Image 1 (cartoon, helix red, strand yellow):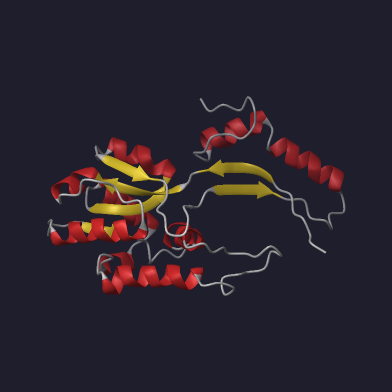
Image 2: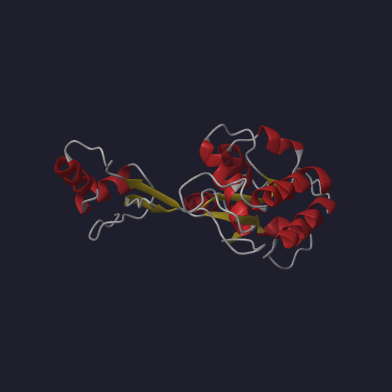
Length: 223
């Protein structure tokens, strides 16, 4: 018997997208943003071969210890290759198809075959990537949508694509949610708390003071 799970979201959004420093790309002679995996390789190779001083063609946060780093590093490529993390029974499914291996091979090739993912990425965290991009030192990087204002403030001429394409297009989007356990001894109290947390007044305060996301409750508009 299949077991269904229902969730009550309180954070939705903040997609992981590919950012591009357009001044760097223009200096390297790149005229179009990539749409496929091979396009990304071509763009980053062109940047690398332009020998621009202190420019990283493609940066990733391989030294970041947070599990959320996978939202930039691996999951988008896994999904774009046609795979998934879980199967329909909710079990980890990374070994059930070739997509996980294909995504891993692509990342390996970026580092060791194409050599467009440099040594610096092996010692960078997500914050390092953000700061280096804001400093004008990175041509391409995958980051969260909510850091775009930082690049505007830094005067970076940037653009983005929401997803590359291999077998399909896909990226990671937050869906942090509240779930009531079936074993809860007081489901009425649990439901009341969930409704309170996601009410417009609480969500407006949460999203304006603690979390830079759009509120999910009607009337809970950020000021």
